[in-house]
Length: 201
Ligand code: ATP
Image (tube, rainbow, N blue to C red; front, side, top):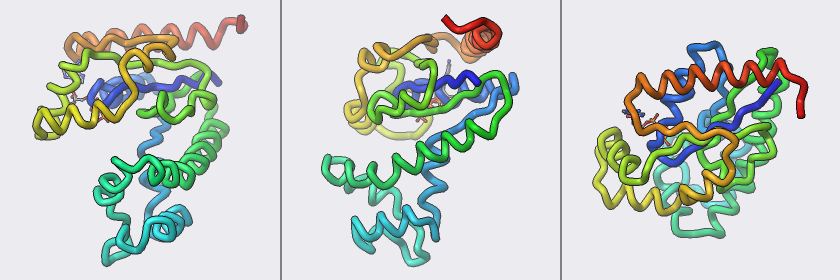
């Protein structure tokens, strides 16, 4: 099983890319989704978060106040490390379980913060969706209805474009339209299938 890590900055087009891979039948393992499932009420990670950050992290129904926690660790590196120490080992374990359960030639693991989290050891190759920062800001503003300052603030907290690109085995330049993105994914699908049928170097 060839494991492809898909990453890219906010609004770069990871979801659009993974949706297109899914049309080819490639299984998609989404680490954002796993992270959300891990903090559902009753999950041990949520109990640990409440113990570490206080009961104010939970709303009246016992659900995580995600926006509150995000804001709280945004400017607090130590808090962020504590949160990551709770979540990352569990995310890794779930990704490994999912990979082990699959039988397809290759799969995609979407890891938005791959450059920041050092999760590259989970994957065999890294595909980076790349767009210039001005385009990222434009797409995030349009999609999330936020202002330019807000979009820039999120970008500034992520790894730089160069740092991400330095990790890439493949780069998908998402500067064209969605049809162009689709054509590039179709080519990558063929390429990854080809890699799985060749003896490794
Ligand atoms: P996030 O990091 O926030 O999860 P993402 O990397 O998954 O974002 P998408 O949601 O796929 O990014 O794309 C961001 C926005 O830009 C979406 O509204 C999407 O439809 C749009 N978009 C993506 N690629 C293109 C493209 N090639 N042409 C036009 N719009 C695009």
